[in-house]
Length: 308
Image (tube, rainbow, N blue to C red; front, side, top):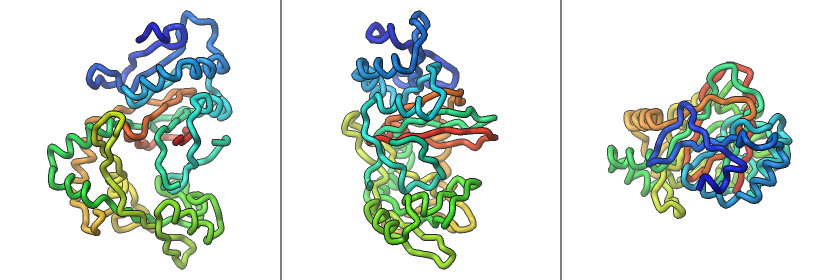
């Protein structure tokens, strides 16, 4: 298969990658050094002509890191994303503060792009883990727990403040979350996301979503996958406003802490965390791969584009 794209790409082996069933995870592509200087316009044309190969590689690997291309600005990133022809999905309903930079709902994104515009001072990696492996290991270790998850799903509860708190990993305000400062419009948009709102006296809002499935079936790869935010919601959704824990079984029963922390351990054992380099673009198949974010020392600027 390499002959199909050697005129454009070279597949790299770099530290931190894992080998999963003879496939490098994630796959890493860089410009072929024998080429003339690889301009952004040439790259976008190459994507159009080699879309079938890139889709196939993403299907097999779950994530592809593009490293060494001449990406410098948000516009470069946007042009690159648009070359793939995926439909844009607005970032709505998440907890992490993010910024919409250049142009680009009840449904979840099928593809995620991340662009490292400013490399972190230290840390700040985006850990990746194959979601079917998490499911398989959890099913093997805790069959009754996973069966309960499959049967009932999860309910998430999160209090959003009136204004963004950039110091918190869950500091996204309701105004940013629903892209409006109009409470009626926020309620309309929340309803489309299947989210119930309960307005607080301090101007914030308590959001409740679920029960929603915690395990999905990946039809393309014909396997069950771990598709939930159980671990970060249980362990990481902590703030003055968010206490106690923001996630339960879909039937309202509490989640057992020991199993949650063991799931975290499994994810850490299986994850790949490649340090960001300026200009990197990471493409993730959201059904195949779970992602997170490690803390970092500034500066760090990672832009995101979500696609259907």
